[in-house]
Length: 336
Image (cartoon, rainbow, N blue to C red):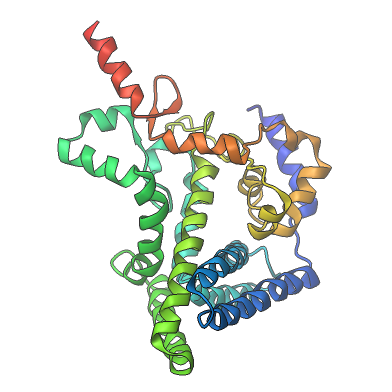
């Protein structure tokens, strides 16, 4: 991407990199109040049918995702002008979403600084190997990687264990404020669970919280996955890596229906978010609509996004993500 073009893209972000207090407050209210109401409805539904409870869990999980987007904006300093206010609200929502706010924010900042950089993978990313790395790895490591990339593990079991257990135990990697964030969040989650359980009972708490956590964590990880793992995505070695190119071509535009866009806080406009992380979620669509240059990015739809499930490795020679079937092609080519 040429320097002049980069400046044009960056200049377009300026008017939207601002917060509007009433919008942030209203979004907080229209997210957390329905979340609490739905949680109570799920409790009442236990007396009717657990099928109804699980059905309500899907709607409740939508508000958990929307809450997480607010936490995400707080971490970027884009939800309130005051960083103290961002940190306060982000930490509160972190308890509700089982996420240590400062620890997650630290890892996410690394993700933004290294996204699409093949030489700086691992922190805040979904593990992705190159074809050469896979072929050169011992058999047991290849098996482990295939297990990790299995859709059931990657989008169901893994996310649930990450938010339930993984974020409770990252102390070996966390230091200072990040470590304190983990400890405080753990105590707050336990305290809130004990408080609610003392009112409705431990069994009721578990029957409500676990399906909500499982559904929301699965959706959240899928959203993160499709934002950086899709056909045509940009990945490059560090010596050639460019931040703006990585933002625009290494982050997807996930075109979702209006309702899903609302629940996911417009995070589908991910190419804009990576270009301007200081733009609050409620201005992302406005930025897209008012700037034709952002519409040059080919959108990914719900249907087309399903193809990304079959992408597991980065082929440096072909400069694209490929599936396991590509390995058979390589083997046959070597034999011939």
